[in-house]
Image (cartoon, rainbow, N blue to C red; front, top):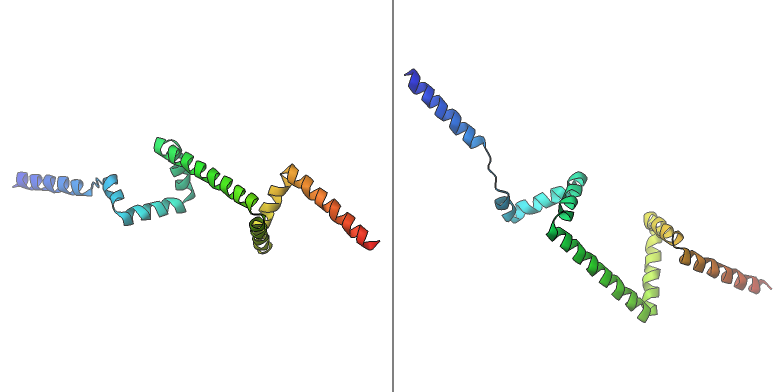
Length: 143
């Protein structure tokens, strides 16, 4: 009887231990769209996990290729936008006016724009030149 009790206890413990082991297959988990989205959202919301994900992507051939393609696409978009603005000065003026109006209400954007302008010497030179021309015009009006 004691032997039967020991065997039953052993089988129960082995069964309990086996059911507690979660052999979750990552691929199976990622196949479910809801679970996959929930995991990605969780990683995106956590700065430490996001940094770990970026490191993993940088160390992955596929991730690195994807980032390089994204960078190429961004450069192409930038080039085409610059060409479009050069070809259509009124559109550029409209975009600049809209950006300035937005910046008036957004101190963070205004600060960023000012820092960008101030760190660009040709832009600063152009602004100084424009300021000098404006003061000459204003001086000429007073006379």
